[in-house]
Length: 306
Ligand SMILES: Nc1ncnc2c1ncn2[C@@H]1O[C@H](COP(=O)(O)OP(=O)(O)OP(=O)(O)O)[C@@H](O)[C@H]1O
Ligand SMILES: [Mg+2]
Image 1 (spheres, rainbow, N blue to C red):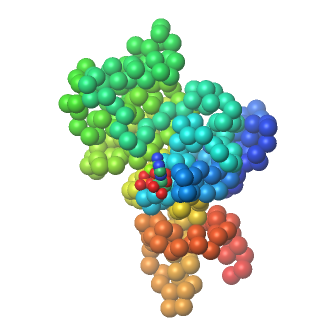
Image 2 (cartoon, rainbow, N blue to C red; image 1 turned 120 degrees about the horizontal axis):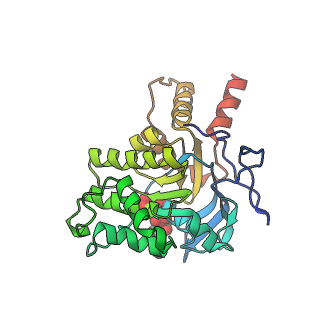
């Protein structure tokens, strides 16, 4: 499913909720699921996020890609309210993360990059813990925990200790933890790292099944370009704290192919998302400044001029 209005761009940093999305069913504009505008975050003298503009459309699967140290996890921790927002603006479904922290937390589920399940608890106990933390009412809790475990295929293993789970099962357990509060926005930081190809597919199938059932928005980081190509509606390439390319995987692939074709002695060979990644991460683009590229608009311009 491709979302409407997929062009990127930050929302205005105003007091009112950001309403830059496409009109909803009643003609009322729907706020972006995530809107970052000129976000900055530094650890001492290290600028981890350096002027990040990002908008995630409700209902899409958005991939935040980039090399190690690009600032993806830091940006995500700002979006999830785990880090403060020292400069710039971040909104989740129109709520300012700096001022409406609890409202934002109620809307999202988060699978962090570092493993978060407790090996000394059973699968069910781990998910129940998250249900309590995320304010799922006591009355609903047991059923919602069972549903979340079922959604990730862990019903049979639910009463085994976490330490007996395989890597793929642990990642699915963490997915269940994030899903138990029925989030409108699921944020996954490297959800499939270290998993075998079958376990990776399984994680994605479970995510997609929940999406189809609920219309949940997904923001994901991954270093697996094949996954991003297959499962993400749009991707952004982040490097040294900001976005350098944005579009659907196909737009990004086609854009690189077109640029290579136009080079003197250029080649028309098919390009992969991995080629796009190398092009952005290996090009030193950030040294030139002001290089944000929305591939959709670049391609429109290219077709106009030639
Ligand atoms: N807690 C911290 N203290 C100091 N520096 C940090 C901390 N966390 C991240 N950094 C630095 O901030 C920068 C961005 O790191 P971040 O973890 O956000 O990158 P990333 O894109 O998630 O990388 P990876 O793909 O390896 O997960 C890096 O230079 C990193 O060393
Ligand atoms: Mg990271």
